[in-house]
Amino acid sequence: MNYEKYSGKSVLLLGKTRSLNGVEFETLLKLHTMSVVKSFDEDVAFIIEGKMMNPLELQESARLYELRTVPIVDINAIEKWLCASIDPNRLLMSLKLSRDQERLVNFVQNPHITDELFFKLLKLYDWQGEGLFDNDANRDVTAAIIGRFYEDLERNHNVQYAMSGLAHLVEKYGNAELIMAISELSPIAKELKIPNEPSLKGVLDTMALHSATPESLLRLLLKERAYLLAHREPLALEQELLALDDATIHRSLAQNRTLSPEGADSLEQKYPELIASFYPLDEVRFERLMGEAISLASNITLTASMQVRLMEMKEETVLSKLAQNTALSSEHLETLFALNCYGKELASNTSLSQGHIEALYQTSEPEIVRALASNTSTPVEILYQLSLDQRTERAVKTNPAFGKHIQTTNLGWN
Picture 1 (cartoon, rainbow, N blue to C red):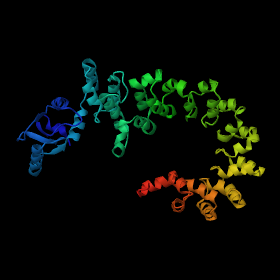
Picture 2 (cartoon, rainbow, N blue to C red):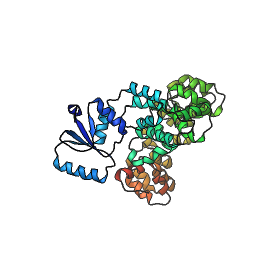
Picture 3 (cartoon, rainbow, N blue to C red):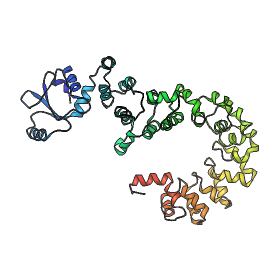
Picture 4 (cartoon, helix red, strand yellow):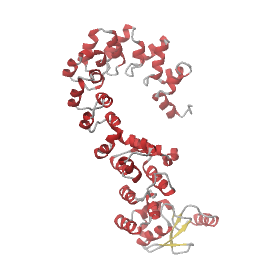
């Protein structure tokens, strides 16, 4: 609807405003030379249905619906249009000068302002030295952050009022701008400097692991969360982590597939089995690590020629690891399947063909069916059968593929 054509007219508001308070609402209307009236007359250009209409307003709304003499619009539509008229610089200057925190909170809670303005408003909020949920205003601002960026909030609205909700927001919907904005909130910025608040651990842990977290923030997290940073992919601050005299962190780095070739070289002598298992292989590194054949057999970057070399060794432990490797070629999977020695290992391999999975299921061997119950490639029909068996029921229920199927088909699985 083109509201501009009603410039110079009056509008009737039934009920109350929603995202804007009454003063802001009328001020923005005046920018378009419009005014609010309390009763309907021939000069009213359109009618706005607000929230919390009283009985008389509901009655009037019903009467005007029947007349249909002028358009009737929802308060959300008109407020969205009005908020596009806000001058960000003027608003920010007004809030800085007035220090009106109540007005500031109202704008932070407004879903119709731009993200750019929202982030600037957050910088002006005074947390009063308290935590994210320690008083009503702080709670409202924190809830507004979560509510603004958390998709499908209607299905999980309580997430707005829990610290775990903020951590989940970062994990699921975080980008560089949002993560930095959250890190600059006074309670979190303080925690980054002087760790003291256990309730913020989950939020900061999630930031440390998130691929979009800027390097400047990762440096602030390094001292307390080096172990988490060593697990992060893509890896950042590699040199700083390698420089730490910490075997636990070095072992984690050796398992990080995004470690640089130079970093892998520096750790290979001390942790050859981990580099062999996890690091992307080239022919030179593969040859150098042939003494770690069992570990190499589980590496998902094995090329066809590397697989042949390992298969030719005909060592049981190596073949057992290969049977579980999702990168193993269909030809080699077929070979191992024909040996009838690696049923349990093959049953856990998500690359196994449906025919082979069905054949393994028919064996009814306990170890094999337990592995199939956890395999995300096992057909749903088989998983249903395994869910009826006490020995495999739990494994089926925790199988992500089965859980996704249940959610998709809305069967109410508990």
